Length: 446
Image (cartoon, rainbow, N blue to C red; front, side, top):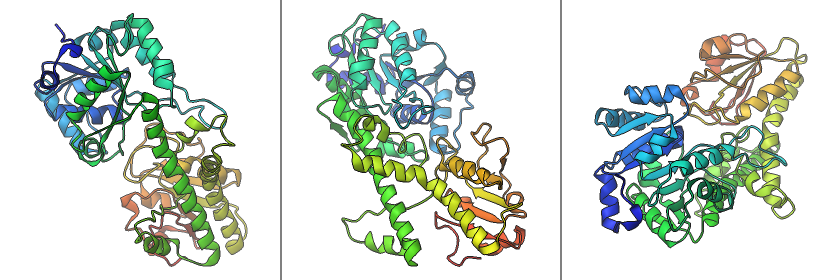
């Protein structure tokens, strides 16, 4: 028999979870779901991992679930399996009926996002509907997915209420607490690096959300006045990064034209406490920073001029990198005929196996238009990727560099730190050009 969380005192509510008497269901067991599950598991809680992928279910229920980006998360989940504190299942009925606290971490779709296309939150709506079907009085539902401001109250709440026949803020707690993690250190982010942002639909929801997240957040909980404010807070974090990366890219371009070293200037400028110049690169990737601006841009481009301009700068950057490589090679060597280009890094960020919306994809597509033969190297293995069919993908760096004419460093993987121009020349053609926006290689150019 499940406890009605609404009837428990503060101490009773926390005790029920940390002593394993009440279960938490995590809906969507990807990077975010696994991280938040691990944080609660490490406090003694019991977790139901609900996911539609059969492979994920089998790995958790056989004690073989692992992530290559975070060994501590893998260790936590494997230990929890041994201790009987985690179980995975595909269906909603059992996962919802057995648990009292339901956390939604499924992502929004990025397939059609951008320009005038609205965010596709259909996956989150479907999960909310399925949870609502089996929701009981006294349960708590928390959404951690980053959403356009207003989505939780205007779209998800009515769906849950309609399916359950219950009222948010009266019969069940509705919480919005956006995930704030960086893949590779996600568990540290949740537990000790950042405070948890928490909002709720009504005072009762807010109280329960604050108590539940205080279990895992050592930095404490920041309460926001409304769910919409909490949704906006997370979006603003991404917008801030996007705008500042665009600034870094423009200043780096200026330095290139003026014969200056941006990195030298950046480090000096950032010694001043009010200066936080970012690192430039080949653009912005991942399912966060290049996406969030569109959550607030639609119909407000004239209001959010800086946000709109920054997004266009960063979207254009990978194309400019490819075109710069072609122009410099032609100027130095002439014809592009038979030119082999190696792009180092498919991941959107160093140290992670995540190619979602990676700017490498745009670099590659532009190079193909110039008739180049393109090879992409990455130390991580991708069973599926969005690279065009004519592009060769390999994990073998020496194979990738063999006979290369142009090298573009797209991702700051640690595996490239020891790559010198001399090592590249051992494999390359006599005609060699290196483009290094990530500033990994030595300063001297071939």
